[in-house]
Image (tube, rainbow, N blue to C red; front, side, top):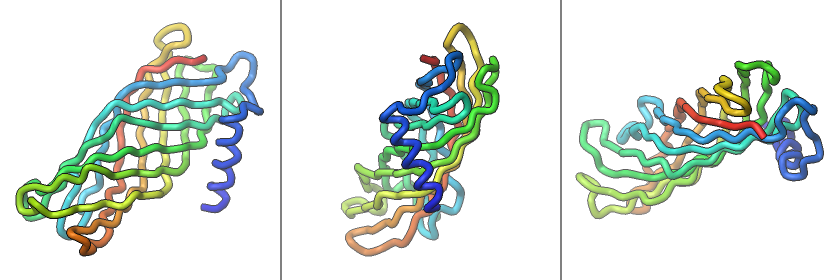
Amino acid sequence: MKKLNKTLLFAALGLCAGGAVAGEDSPDWILRIGTHYVEPKSDNHDVVSVGSGQTLTFNLTRMLTDRWGVELLAALPFEHDISLNTGGKVADVKHLPPTLSLQYHFAPDGHVRPYVGAGLNATLFFQEDTGGALAGTDLELDTSFGPAAQVGMDVDVGSHWFLNFDVRWIDIDTKATLDGASLGSVEIDPITYGLSFGRNF
């Protein structure tokens, strides 16, 4: 993990400074706008479960060389229902999942361009609103930090324009408290499925 953190740090510095650039025929920047569907793993917690969510997402990749790039993923807030395992919705919560990834692109000059990536995610939870059996209580979910991985593919649909498909796994474990009492760790660990429209610059 320490080696990965150092690699991502140097890659992020390159993203900001623009010191290393791609070849003449390759894009310096890749912008994608679309939607991601988040499917948490089953058995999130002994007492509660976190449902799926979907929202508009954005990601920007700075190509450092023809094949290596750094991507920053951002999104509008995701919203998830929280239900008791015995049945019934008891809360809903919103979160933001900014993720920084180092990517390797296998065919940078092709019309179909697969890639893989690995990086770090920070998930920030907010607006934990309770209801049902938990109405009137104070539910809090801590910010989560963890690794993330992705596989994706860009498919050309015109000059500089393309469709993107990607699948991500994110390690999201958050500590939950209810009225100040610990409920333990909620292991969300979702798989996400994305469809985006993008452009090379």
